Image 1 (cartoon, rainbow, N blue to C red):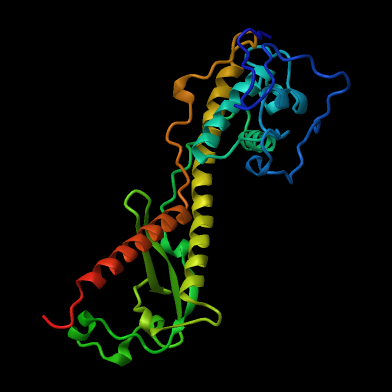
Image 2 (cartoon, one colour):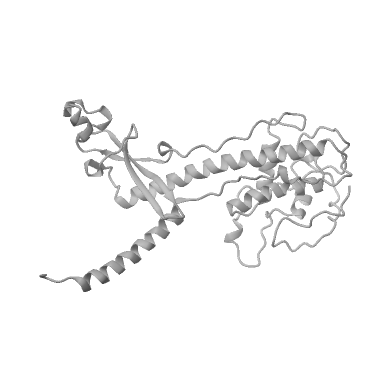
Length: 312
């Protein structure tokens, strides 16, 4: 194996400065060697100067994972253990790209799950399917039920003009029918935050005809709607990005399988994960807009008091 160009670490804060990885500790290699604990402390919650042993680094990969020292050309790669240490490190940089766009440190357990996903029902002789498309964001996925209609919802002007009588109101817009609330627009650049009240068929509802469920307030429904929006957004972005980096890793591994491991396992730029989507949660945008509204309200109050007169 050629270690001349072996990187030292994927961890920016790693204190190991090794040009060549030291030999593996003696003893039998097990498939489950060095598995990191599932319950782990987030790096940002640790004290300054305290290193996270689960942080993904060359040393962590070397000490906790199985790998091969050599593989002939055109040999099938079935799992991570069929890759060399250098290949494992280099393939981990694809996961590092995902960690960067998600603003979350990559850990050893993350890398193990990443490899498990790459080789899930796949090997280097298997065709690579097209990556998943980004699912559109839909209100029905992010809304929450907050109450019921207190009375039949008034007919729209268009329906009245068309001759529809109050008795002809749709079932989902009659008294007692469930009402939903949620975010329909969120733009971090412009600060636009749009909330919507909808019936179960997703048509707009005037909130003055809504009776909130017991314990619900204008604050609680917004809090719950934000959490629901964020949960669905995490799933949506994670699914897309995971599919993209998985495909990139598979393309790289297929190329490596065709050559002898004596050659440096490079990753071509074309096989890098371009188009990863950042995760934009509702909280930061809404908090920032709330602070702007508070400041605007204070300025408005100060100016309106000085301009008010009793009689013109």
